[in-house]
Length: 110
Image (cartoon, rainbow, N blue to C red; front, side, top):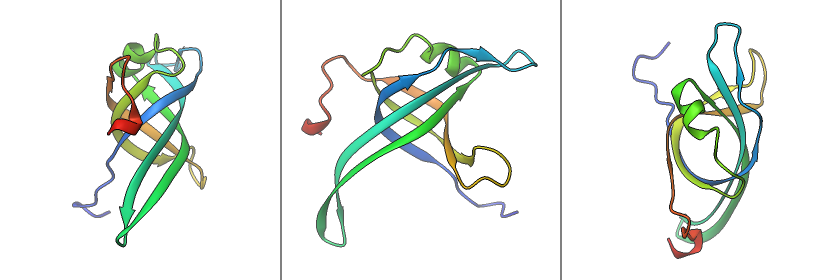
């Protein structure tokens, strides 16, 4: 394993699905979400529209903090990507830090 390997993702996204807060057998809170991101980025000198939907999971205190979020809430979230389960090619965004953006947040104005 590489000691200096990086796996960090920061994403501004809108919550489009929130599942009911659940607990692992060890009692750890788990919140599963579906996030939608839209942005215009510059790649190779050209503007590009980016739209994606990503499955996310928030565990522990961050799961408890986000459990009352409503659909449409915008978050700035930081975490890492991991396979949904060992051997899977599907990814989950594991949220480690999140900040709710103000109710008047408009992603097109950024």
